[in-house]
Length: 339
View (cartoon, rainbow, N blue to C red):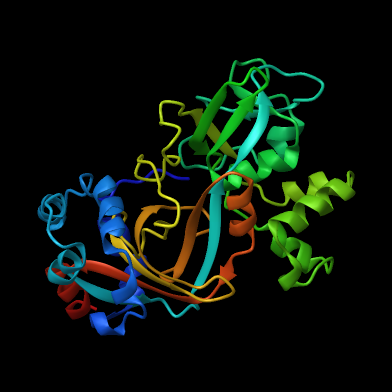
């Protein structure tokens, strides 16, 4: 996942969010608000609120660290704000993969996870995924962190942005987002639909994985349809009981962290989620992460945790609903009055 700081939102909001519709809501408008575990949400908010330096955020963080009633804290100092850009809400899920790998290349482990090369330009487009993987441009430079056995595992690890690699000696290393090649993300799921191979409702991470494995010739070209290529860095300093690092360079929390578009939602802000579908969710979360595919005022990616079970759940999520952002009172009023 990309690393941003909260202050970035101020400039970004003056562009994309300037064209969004902003509406104040009442607490009674939030479906399920009274039933949520506000204390858990406040604890997650505390994890990153110390990094918010603008406006009333530092004062609210100081108050959050005191022992007052959690629901009263949010209701006293925030206002719920619905931000819409005209597009339907879409919620997906992400997770931290746990994969087998090795520190050195072997017949089994042949697919490298690279650190970002120093000659890759910041922000500007560099080589595409296909060009990187079919050339030797990164070989022999000591950039390999670990090697995986499956190219599809590597592809999805790059989409997730972080993961755990279990080595054959029992050691586990953790990798996190370390940069990208400057090309936009393109969905290979949508490409399978465009080619007429699957209908939209049939596409999932498991479907893509099976198709690539069953089509050894066409599989690599499908993955190359996404020119975006993510580099990694080792982040094994993060305790094993904590989630991976998100965009605020702090551990994210399963079921309480939401990846958002920071052009519309300030990182670190509490966010009320009303997700529909087979696994409905009504929960106060915190906007602590971003993603290259997460674009729009009502676009969110829910962190479901680490491991295979979290991956199975996350891969099935594609639901509607709505996001309501909790903003400090003065900021909320100013946002509505200024539109």
